[in-house]
Length: 400
Image (cartoon, rainbow, N blue to C red; front, side):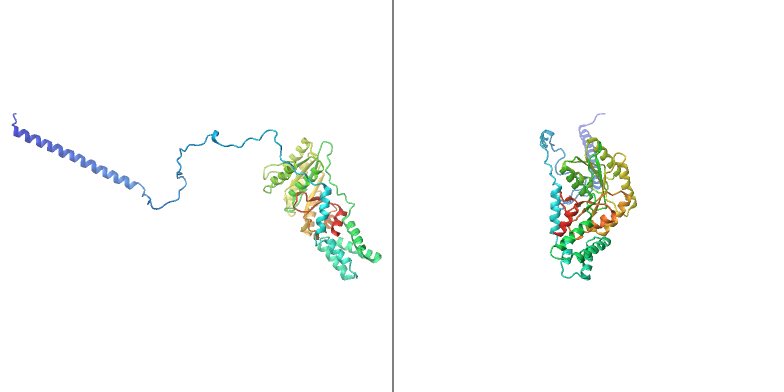
């Protein structure tokens, strides 16, 4: 078929128009689809926070500093210099001698204005000693925790001697001194059994109720023994009070004494046993075992104390059982002492907080109650404020 020129032009024009329309249609369809997708994406995204409001960073948010920040290498880090071999160790404390402690005991007791001795001397020095004065003397003694029976005994002896010998000048002091010394009983053996026996160290078990100062007493006693050139080992069998073992270890480190300890809440008897065993292995002269404070009314805890002693005795004999009593507790301290004496064989007493001498009569009362001597007295908070007890020095301090 032959197509004329005008027809060819018309045909081409129609085809071009159709092509253009097709292209436009494709563009419109694509644009519409893109718009729909864009709208869907926008709908899925969370609403943006206004830039004007600042919010606190939340857990998991990135820090402002990029995570790929360069880190320091081991070579760039300043590390502490290792201690040089042969460096001198920290200087150890030099504990005070027993005689020095006794001097301080007398000085401190004499400074007290509420002294038992001063009160009694003032009453005995009156011109007339009638029944009223003797009642005041009796009240003074009972108030000072001497106890009813010892008080009646002392007053009766004083009245008899005053009636026979009379009272003039220093005579009242002489009579009172002699009778007080007799009441404190200087004949009791107050020595500590801390001598090593053949291949075994002396073992000292320290017991008492909560708050009397047992751990501090053990630390101070270690200082007393170190001053006597004895090799001491500490056993931290108080596993129930937080930081008790740390406290005891600190006391030991100050005078160069080792401490055997176990886990918090561990078996006290096991730790005590290990301490004695190590003391034997290392040739110690004395092993001091600190026990947990326990209320004297708690039967289970008291029975456990007996167990500690029995376990120790599988390895070595317990030479001393020292009962620590707070001197300010008065008659309550006597009740505690009775219960402990029933559970365990107490061999000696330690009276702490005796720097207030108005209650000094507890020395007489507790000895009379238990038939056990006071062997050590605590005078205050100082490291060397624990002294061997001496009956004559004690009475002289009361009367100075």
